[in-house]
Picture 1 (cartoon, rainbow, N blue to C red):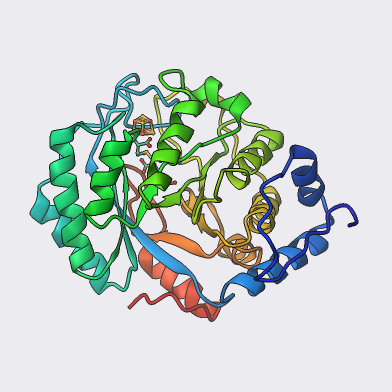
Picture 2 (picture 1 turned 45 degrees about the vertical axis):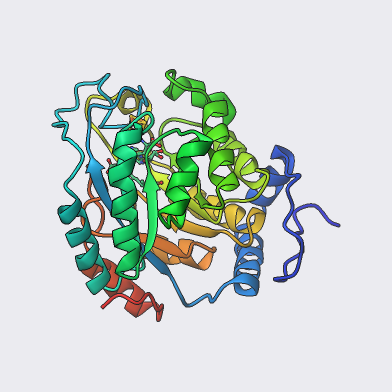
Length: 327
Ligand code: SAM
Ligand code: DTB
Ligand code: SF4
Protein backbone atom coordinates (compact mmCIF):
# COMPACT_ATOMS: atom_id res chain seq x y z
CA UNK A 1 0.00 0.00 0.00
CA UNK A 2 1.31 3.52 -0.80
CA UNK A 3 2.61 5.56 2.12
CA UNK A 4 -0.13 7.43 3.92
CA UNK A 5 -2.93 5.33 2.39
CA UNK A 6 -5.14 3.53 4.88
CA UNK A 7 -8.03 1.26 4.02
CA UNK A 8 -11.41 2.59 5.15
CA UNK A 9 -14.69 0.73 5.32
CA UNK A 10 -16.65 -0.09 8.43
CA UNK A 11 -15.54 -3.72 8.15
CA UNK A 12 -11.84 -2.91 7.60
CA UNK A 13 -9.78 -4.30 10.48
CA UNK A 14 -8.72 -1.86 13.16
CA UNK A 15 -4.90 -1.72 13.13
CA UNK A 16 -3.00 -2.06 16.42
CA UNK A 17 0.54 -1.98 15.06
CA UNK A 18 0.97 1.75 14.49
CA UNK A 19 4.37 3.35 14.75
CA UNK A 20 5.40 6.99 14.80
CA UNK A 21 6.60 6.94 11.19
CA UNK A 22 3.13 5.79 10.01
CA UNK A 23 1.44 8.43 12.12
CA UNK A 24 3.85 11.11 10.93
CA UNK A 25 3.32 10.18 7.28
CA UNK A 26 -0.43 10.55 7.68
CA UNK A 27 -0.16 13.75 9.71
CA UNK A 28 2.02 15.41 7.06
CA UNK A 29 -0.09 14.47 4.01
CA UNK A 30 -1.29 17.45 1.98
CA UNK A 31 -4.20 18.89 3.98
CA UNK A 32 -6.83 18.02 1.35
CA UNK A 33 -5.64 14.40 1.13
CA UNK A 34 -5.51 13.98 4.91
CA UNK A 35 -8.94 15.45 5.58
CA UNK A 36 -10.53 13.64 2.61
CA UNK A 37 -9.23 10.32 3.89
CA UNK A 38 -10.33 11.08 7.45
CA UNK A 39 -13.80 12.16 6.32
CA UNK A 40 -14.17 8.95 4.26
CA UNK A 41 -13.27 6.77 7.25
CA UNK A 42 -15.55 8.86 9.43
CA UNK A 43 -18.48 8.31 7.05
CA UNK A 44 -17.76 4.57 6.88
CA UNK A 45 -18.10 4.27 10.65
CA UNK A 46 -20.36 7.09 11.88
CA UNK A 47 -23.21 9.36 10.89
CA UNK A 48 -21.21 12.43 9.76
CA UNK A 49 -24.10 14.72 10.69
CA UNK A 50 -24.34 13.68 14.31
CA UNK A 51 -22.32 14.82 17.32
CA UNK A 52 -22.47 13.19 20.75
CA UNK A 53 -22.81 15.41 23.82
CA UNK A 54 -21.52 14.93 27.33
CA UNK A 55 -21.56 17.13 30.39
CA UNK A 56 -19.11 17.22 33.25
CA UNK A 57 -19.44 17.69 36.97
CA UNK A 58 -16.61 18.01 39.46
CA UNK A 59 -17.96 15.99 42.38
CA UNK A 60 -14.79 16.42 44.45
CA UNK A 61 -12.67 19.44 43.66
CA UNK A 62 -9.03 20.31 44.46
CA UNK A 63 -6.56 19.20 47.13
CA UNK A 64 -5.27 16.38 44.91
CA UNK A 65 -2.01 14.69 46.01
CA UNK A 66 -0.80 14.18 42.42
CA UNK A 67 1.54 16.77 40.87
CA UNK A 68 0.13 16.95 37.30
CA UNK A 69 1.79 20.14 36.06
CA UNK A 70 -1.24 21.25 34.04
CA UNK A 71 -3.94 20.92 36.67
CA UNK A 72 -5.61 23.57 38.84
CA UNK A 73 -6.58 20.86 41.36
CA UNK A 74 -3.13 19.66 42.40
CA UNK A 75 -2.29 20.46 46.03
CA UNK A 76 1.35 20.95 44.92
CA UNK A 77 0.62 24.36 43.38
CA UNK A 78 -0.97 27.58 44.54
CA UNK A 79 -3.76 28.03 42.01
CA UNK A 80 -6.19 29.81 44.32
CA UNK A 81 -8.68 26.93 44.06
CA UNK A 82 -10.69 26.01 47.14
CA UNK A 83 -10.78 22.25 47.85
CA UNK A 84 -14.18 20.69 48.52
CA UNK A 85 -15.47 17.42 49.97
CA UNK A 86 -17.35 14.83 47.95
CA UNK A 87 -20.58 16.39 46.69
CA UNK A 88 -23.88 15.40 48.14
CA UNK A 89 -25.79 12.64 46.28
CA UNK A 90 -28.92 14.76 45.72
CA UNK A 91 -26.91 17.65 44.24
CA UNK A 92 -25.15 15.33 41.79
CA UNK A 93 -28.38 13.68 40.67
CA UNK A 94 -30.14 17.07 40.42
CA UNK A 95 -27.37 18.35 38.12
CA UNK A 96 -27.63 15.21 36.00
CA UNK A 97 -31.40 15.76 35.69
CA UNK A 98 -30.84 19.29 34.37
CA UNK A 99 -28.28 18.01 31.84
CA UNK A 100 -30.72 15.32 30.71
CA UNK A 101 -33.49 17.93 30.31
CA UNK A 102 -31.11 19.97 28.14
CA UNK A 103 -30.73 16.95 25.84
CA UNK A 104 -27.22 15.88 26.95
CA UNK A 105 -26.57 12.15 26.46
CA UNK A 106 -23.73 11.37 28.90
CA UNK A 107 -22.96 12.57 32.41
CA UNK A 108 -19.35 12.46 33.53
CA UNK A 109 -18.49 12.77 37.23
CA UNK A 110 -14.90 13.71 38.07
CA UNK A 111 -12.99 13.58 41.35
CA UNK A 112 -9.59 15.08 42.17
CA UNK A 113 -8.20 11.87 43.64
CA UNK A 114 -5.06 9.82 43.10
CA UNK A 115 -7.34 6.84 43.69
CA UNK A 116 -10.71 6.40 45.43
CA UNK A 117 -11.07 5.00 48.95
CA UNK A 118 -13.48 2.09 49.35
CA UNK A 119 -15.88 4.16 51.46
CA UNK A 120 -15.95 6.90 48.76
CA UNK A 121 -16.74 4.21 46.23
CA UNK A 122 -19.98 3.33 48.08
CA UNK A 123 -21.23 6.85 47.44
CA UNK A 124 -19.93 6.97 43.87
CA UNK A 125 -21.66 3.65 43.06
CA UNK A 126 -24.99 4.95 44.29
CA UNK A 127 -24.53 8.14 42.20
CA UNK A 128 -23.80 6.01 39.10
CA UNK A 129 -26.89 3.86 39.65
CA UNK A 130 -29.08 6.95 40.18
CA UNK A 131 -27.78 8.78 37.06
CA UNK A 132 -28.18 5.64 34.99
CA UNK A 133 -31.71 5.39 36.39
CA UNK A 134 -32.71 8.72 34.84
CA UNK A 135 -31.72 7.37 31.43
CA UNK A 136 -28.26 8.91 30.91
CA UNK A 137 -25.01 7.22 29.95
CA UNK A 138 -22.60 7.37 32.87
CA UNK A 139 -18.88 8.12 33.01
CA UNK A 140 -16.60 8.66 36.00
CA UNK A 141 -12.99 9.70 36.34
CA UNK A 142 -11.55 9.01 39.77
CA UNK A 143 -7.86 8.28 39.25
CA UNK A 144 -6.20 4.87 39.58
CA UNK A 145 -7.92 1.81 40.98
CA UNK A 146 -7.76 -1.92 41.62
CA UNK A 147 -9.53 -4.73 39.72
CA UNK A 148 -11.86 -5.19 42.72
CA UNK A 149 -12.87 -1.53 42.66
CA UNK A 150 -13.52 -1.62 38.90
CA UNK A 151 -15.81 -4.63 39.35
CA UNK A 152 -17.84 -2.61 41.86
CA UNK A 153 -18.21 0.26 39.37
CA UNK A 154 -19.32 -2.20 36.69
CA UNK A 155 -21.92 -3.69 39.05
CA UNK A 156 -23.26 -0.18 39.71
CA UNK A 157 -23.95 0.11 35.96
CA UNK A 158 -21.05 2.34 34.88
CA UNK A 159 -20.77 2.74 31.09
CA UNK A 160 -17.42 4.59 30.67
CA UNK A 161 -14.30 5.23 32.70
CA UNK A 162 -12.20 8.27 31.74
CA UNK A 163 -8.50 7.86 32.39
CA UNK A 164 -6.21 9.87 30.13
CA UNK A 165 -2.65 9.05 29.15
CA UNK A 166 -2.29 12.78 28.49
CA UNK A 167 0.86 12.82 26.32
CA UNK A 168 3.68 10.75 24.84
CA UNK A 169 5.75 8.40 27.05
CA UNK A 170 8.69 10.85 26.71
CA UNK A 171 6.72 13.93 27.75
CA UNK A 172 4.75 12.22 30.54
CA UNK A 173 7.61 12.34 33.05
CA UNK A 174 8.10 16.05 32.38
CA UNK A 175 4.58 16.93 33.56
CA UNK A 176 3.85 14.30 36.24
CA UNK A 177 6.24 12.69 38.73
CA UNK A 178 3.86 11.18 41.31
CA UNK A 179 2.79 8.32 39.01
CA UNK A 180 3.99 6.63 35.87
CA UNK A 181 2.39 5.99 32.54
CA UNK A 182 2.49 2.29 33.46
CA UNK A 183 0.21 3.07 36.46
CA UNK A 184 -2.18 4.63 33.99
CA UNK A 185 -2.20 1.70 31.55
CA UNK A 186 -2.60 -0.75 34.48
CA UNK A 187 -5.84 1.00 35.51
CA UNK A 188 -7.02 0.98 31.89
CA UNK A 189 -6.52 -2.80 31.88
CA UNK A 190 -8.60 -3.14 35.08
CA UNK A 191 -11.37 -1.07 33.47
CA UNK A 192 -11.37 -3.36 30.42
CA UNK A 193 -11.36 -6.54 32.54
CA UNK A 194 -14.49 -5.29 34.32
CA UNK A 195 -16.23 -4.79 30.95
CA UNK A 196 -16.43 -0.99 31.29
CA UNK A 197 -15.88 1.11 28.14
CA UNK A 198 -12.72 3.20 28.03
CA UNK A 199 -12.49 6.96 27.50
CA UNK A 200 -8.82 7.85 27.12
CA UNK A 201 -7.01 10.73 25.45
CA UNK A 202 -4.85 13.65 26.41
CA UNK A 203 -3.91 17.30 26.37
CA UNK A 204 -2.11 19.37 23.74
CA UNK A 205 -0.65 22.86 24.06
CA UNK A 206 1.48 22.21 27.16
CA UNK A 207 4.77 22.83 25.32
CA UNK A 208 5.06 19.32 23.85
CA UNK A 209 6.21 18.78 20.25
CA UNK A 210 4.08 17.45 17.40
CA UNK A 211 6.03 14.19 17.80
CA UNK A 212 4.69 13.89 21.39
CA UNK A 213 1.14 14.36 20.16
CA UNK A 214 1.65 11.64 17.57
CA UNK A 215 3.34 9.42 20.19
CA UNK A 216 0.20 9.79 22.28
CA UNK A 217 -2.00 8.72 19.34
CA UNK A 218 0.25 5.71 18.66
CA UNK A 219 -0.02 4.64 22.30
CA UNK A 220 -3.82 4.99 22.25
CA UNK A 221 -4.24 3.22 18.91
CA UNK A 222 -2.03 0.30 20.02
CA UNK A 223 -3.78 -0.36 23.36
CA UNK A 224 -5.01 -3.99 23.54
CA UNK A 225 -8.35 -2.56 22.46
CA UNK A 226 -8.73 1.00 21.17
CA UNK A 227 -10.64 3.33 23.53
CA UNK A 228 -14.31 3.80 22.65
CA UNK A 229 -13.87 7.54 23.37
CA UNK A 230 -10.79 9.70 22.74
CA UNK A 231 -10.90 13.18 24.31
CA UNK A 232 -8.51 15.75 22.86
CA UNK A 233 -8.11 18.61 25.33
CA UNK A 234 -6.44 21.91 24.50
CA UNK A 235 -4.66 22.93 27.67
CA UNK A 236 -7.00 25.29 29.54
CA UNK A 237 -4.93 28.05 31.04
CA UNK A 238 -4.45 27.81 34.80
CA UNK A 239 -2.36 30.31 36.77
CA UNK A 240 0.23 28.97 39.20
CA UNK A 241 0.98 25.58 37.60
CA UNK A 242 4.32 24.65 35.95
CA UNK A 243 2.75 24.17 32.51
CA UNK A 244 2.02 27.89 32.52
CA UNK A 245 5.73 28.45 31.87
CA UNK A 246 5.91 26.12 28.86
CA UNK A 247 2.44 26.28 27.30
CA UNK A 248 2.01 27.22 23.68
CA UNK A 249 -1.38 27.28 21.97
CA UNK A 250 -1.26 24.84 19.01
CA UNK A 251 -1.47 26.16 15.47
CA UNK A 252 -5.13 25.75 14.36
CA UNK A 253 -4.18 23.70 11.30
CA UNK A 254 -2.09 21.41 13.54
CA UNK A 255 -5.22 20.74 15.61
CA UNK A 256 -7.21 19.70 12.51
CA UNK A 257 -4.33 17.51 11.35
CA UNK A 258 -4.21 15.80 14.74
CA UNK A 259 -7.96 15.16 14.78
CA UNK A 260 -7.84 13.75 11.25
CA UNK A 261 -4.88 11.52 12.14
CA UNK A 262 -6.72 10.28 15.25
CA UNK A 263 -9.80 9.52 13.15
CA UNK A 264 -7.78 7.48 10.66
CA UNK A 265 -5.78 5.59 13.31
CA UNK A 266 -8.83 4.90 15.52
CA UNK A 267 -11.66 4.58 12.98
CA UNK A 268 -14.32 3.36 15.38
CA UNK A 269 -13.53 5.60 18.37
CA UNK A 270 -15.59 8.68 19.16
CA UNK A 271 -13.16 11.64 19.08
CA UNK A 272 -14.15 14.36 21.52
CA UNK A 273 -13.14 18.02 21.26
CA UNK A 274 -12.80 18.50 24.99
CA UNK A 275 -11.25 21.32 27.02
CA UNK A 276 -10.12 24.53 25.36
CA UNK A 277 -12.92 25.01 22.85
CA UNK A 278 -13.36 28.59 24.09
CA UNK A 279 -10.04 29.35 22.34
CA UNK A 280 -11.32 27.87 19.09
CA UNK A 281 -13.27 29.76 16.41
CA UNK A 282 -16.46 28.36 14.89
CA UNK A 283 -14.59 27.83 11.61
CA UNK A 284 -11.88 25.77 13.29
CA UNK A 285 -14.42 23.68 15.17
CA UNK A 286 -16.24 23.07 11.88
CA UNK A 287 -12.96 21.87 10.31
CA UNK A 288 -12.32 19.55 13.28
CA UNK A 289 -15.84 18.10 12.92
CA UNK A 290 -15.20 17.58 9.18
CA UNK A 291 -11.90 15.87 10.03
CA UNK A 292 -13.69 13.31 12.22
CA UNK A 293 -14.35 14.79 15.66
CA UNK A 294 -17.84 13.75 16.77
CA UNK A 295 -18.32 14.61 20.41
CA UNK A 296 -18.18 17.73 22.61
CA UNK A 297 -18.60 18.66 26.26
CA UNK A 298 -21.61 20.90 26.84
CA UNK A 299 -21.78 23.49 29.62
CA UNK A 300 -20.09 26.77 30.48
CA UNK A 301 -17.77 25.19 33.06
CA UNK A 302 -15.78 21.97 32.65
CA UNK A 303 -14.38 21.05 36.08
CA UNK A 304 -12.73 24.26 37.26
CA UNK A 305 -12.25 26.13 33.97
CA UNK A 306 -14.48 27.58 31.26
CA UNK A 307 -15.97 26.12 28.11
CA UNK A 308 -18.08 27.80 25.39
CA UNK A 309 -21.63 28.64 26.32
CA UNK A 310 -24.20 26.03 25.46
CA UNK A 311 -26.09 28.48 23.22
CA UNK A 312 -22.98 29.07 21.13
CA UNK A 313 -22.58 25.30 20.65
CA UNK A 314 -26.23 24.83 19.81
CA UNK A 315 -26.09 27.65 17.28
CA UNK A 316 -22.93 26.30 15.64
CA UNK A 317 -24.29 22.76 15.38
CA UNK A 318 -27.53 24.08 13.89
CA UNK A 319 -25.64 26.13 11.29
CA UNK A 320 -23.72 22.99 10.34
CA UNK A 321 -26.90 20.87 10.11
CA UNK A 322 -25.57 18.57 12.83
CA UNK A 323 -27.96 16.67 15.09
CA UNK A 324 -26.96 16.45 18.74
CA UNK A 325 -30.16 15.93 20.71
CA UNK A 326 -29.69 19.30 22.49
CA UNK A 327 -32.99 20.97 23.32
N1 SAM B 1 -8.00 12.88 38.96
C1 SAM B 1 -8.42 12.09 37.89
C2 SAM B 1 -7.34 11.84 36.87
O1 SAM B 1 -6.44 12.65 36.73
O2 SAM B 1 -7.44 10.82 36.20
C3 SAM B 1 -9.65 12.61 37.17
C4 SAM B 1 -9.83 14.10 36.95
S1 SAM B 1 -8.63 14.88 35.90
C5 SAM B 1 -9.05 16.59 36.08
C6 SAM B 1 -9.16 14.42 34.27
C7 SAM B 1 -8.38 14.92 33.09
O3 SAM B 1 -8.60 16.32 32.91
C8 SAM B 1 -6.87 14.82 33.12
O4 SAM B 1 -6.40 13.56 32.81
C9 SAM B 1 -6.46 15.80 32.05
O5 SAM B 1 -6.40 15.16 30.79
C10 SAM B 1 -7.61 16.80 32.03
N2 SAM B 1 -7.20 18.14 32.47
C11 SAM B 1 -6.88 18.52 33.73
N3 SAM B 1 -6.55 19.83 33.77
C12 SAM B 1 -6.66 20.29 32.50
C13 SAM B 1 -6.45 21.57 31.89
N4 SAM B 1 -6.07 22.62 32.59
N5 SAM B 1 -6.67 21.68 30.56
C14 SAM B 1 -7.06 20.62 29.84
N6 SAM B 1 -7.28 19.39 30.36
C15 SAM B 1 -7.07 19.22 31.68
C1 DTB C 1 -11.18 14.97 29.69
O1 DTB C 1 -10.40 14.44 28.87
N1 DTB C 1 -11.40 16.27 29.79
C2 DTB C 1 -12.30 16.55 30.88
C3 DTB C 1 -12.74 15.14 31.34
N2 DTB C 1 -11.89 14.28 30.59
C4 DTB C 1 -12.75 14.81 32.76
C5 DTB C 1 -11.70 17.41 31.91
C6 DTB C 1 -11.19 18.72 31.37
C7 DTB C 1 -10.71 19.53 32.52
C8 DTB C 1 -10.32 20.90 32.13
C9 DTB C 1 -9.75 21.64 33.27
C10 DTB C 1 -10.70 22.01 34.34
O2 DTB C 1 -11.84 22.46 34.06
O3 DTB C 1 -10.28 21.97 35.51
FE1 SF4 D 1 -5.27 15.23 40.46
FE2 SF4 D 1 -6.38 14.42 38.18
FE3 SF4 D 1 -5.62 17.00 38.48
FE4 SF4 D 1 -3.77 15.12 38.27
S1 SF4 D 1 -5.27 15.68 36.69
S2 SF4 D 1 -3.81 16.76 39.78
S3 SF4 D 1 -4.74 13.38 39.29
S4 SF4 D 1 -7.20 15.94 39.60
